[in-house]
Length: 321
Image 1 (spheres, rainbow, N blue to C red):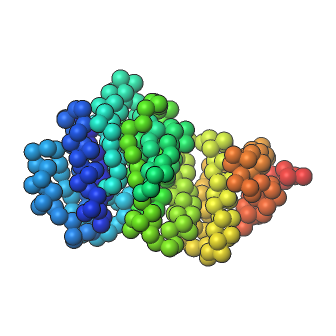
Image 2 (image 1 turned 45 degrees about the horizontal axis):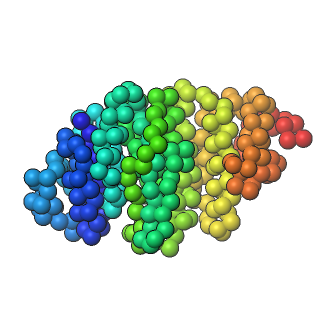
């Protein structure tokens, strides 16, 4: 059985269309969990009455606004269904989505099944996010709940980029991932939404990304998974987003600094830095244009790392010469 978890906040204009995209599914045996995130205007009674004979609907009311990550985690914690699909309150599932995703998950015994999805703005613009490009979103995917619970894979309680952190954690805890080529949903990239209409949305996303990724890397490390390539790329991505924050002339928050410090000083990362080959791998990833975002000077990367521990970088002495 599948449970579709939908965080709800200021979504009164869109939630009915989203729910009707589930009424139209080719299979009917699934649950829908709405987690209302501190929104007192949400028409709970009206929604229950309208959809009582159309969907197996469960509505959870949170008193405080804690963000979509908290709401999605509430959905995980309050269901016993075998599989989970995460959706936003203005998104649309294609009619075959639940059947296709659940069938492929069961047939392939997959922990995660990922599919392309369509990114659509409230204009005529749209883009297809392929399975290799959409890891930062939870959209177009189905997750085995047992896999998440057994590995303690949770959403961090961030107000932005919590799905990217969740996926970094989940995707690096299993090799049992199955990809399908058929789009399963439309993600409405609504620039007028509560979050994206915030003038500081872009900068908050940069900070949230760094905080979320360092959190995810630490969770993976705590499971004893040491992947030199993953963490060398992680160092470069963190460095790049840090530089973008500086470019935006944004103060680097203490939470960002603490996250980077905690990641770089994890015992397993400190062990990696004692091997010069790890610093070489960092430089190789920095030079790789697909990872660098234009910041590809190895020396500046090493200077960035020295902000957090000079001896750690010097232990791999001579790497950049």
